[in-house]
Image: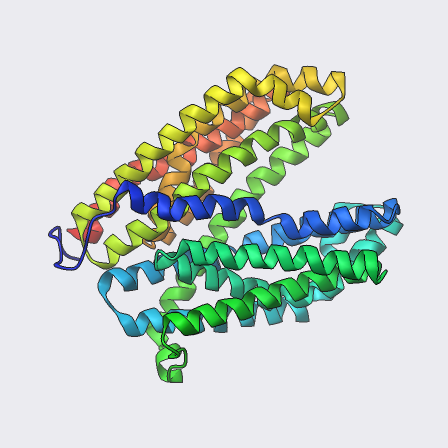
Length: 443
């Protein structure tokens, strides 16, 4: 590919560009799990522990299932940013309905396969009969939101890819506000119980999808429809599906690492499991910030890649990595200085507090050690280096499992050490591969 020189219309990314995307993305990350949280809170007010456990279990299942299909958002950001950088207006318009075709097909497949999916997932969770029955009722209703949820992934990705992250955030905020209102109305006012909670999620996602269509209509000047020959152009569809496949495998490998980490903590006993659950919130906070910067990398690197501007691409990578380390150092310092107080705020158990403090120093290392992992995830997605990303993530998973095996004598500290090795492997392998891919892509 070509070339290292700047095109007349391309402007290199600045710090302002990074935060115009990263800021709304960070806020959006905070809103993402709200549908399950709101449903859990509303059902919790009914005072039935079985229903509460069922909603909580099913919400986790949906979070994990939809996380697996997060490639729809990531690839759409990348392809949209590349089309924007290349000045390809027709492709920019085609990406949204083309994404809807794929998300709709996947959503329909999930609905068709809901019986075996529900059986497999709920059996694996191992809840009581009452909890499993409640979770099944919630699952079989909310699964009908799958095409809407996945289409909203595409919509958000399309908006972020055009550096319209504030509009993407608005869509997600509306989804959550409608979810809260509908859940309160259907569960607490109309007394529809678990059925109402599931229906509220469908109503919220449907409202968000309709709002997104209105926004897209305004952006395109009412030109959302394109000939089927353009939407279903064979070579472009093959490329999109290949990238989506690779990102999905990459995500599955990442999920496998965290599920394995959780399972090993559970086998160590209830106290260790509880302490790790508390400390996982520190990782979650870190990911809100670092993943927001990764989203910025997807857009600004994708735009530079589409413009075939090597200088702008390399500059964008340095910008994201630099700000990533800035955030990470601050977060690590907060964890070291105030982590004990945060632990006390999260649990009243004296034993859990003691255990969590014992491993806090390992968690405090995670933001700094994870900068390359998050930053280069965004870089590789923006450039659609999905095959390399997939292979390196699988290799990182193997590094994690090998580290866990070697560090087993150190118990839970060894488990956390293995997770840190996973962070380092993810980022380090991509950083090592990056120069070769840069040369291959830009010459």
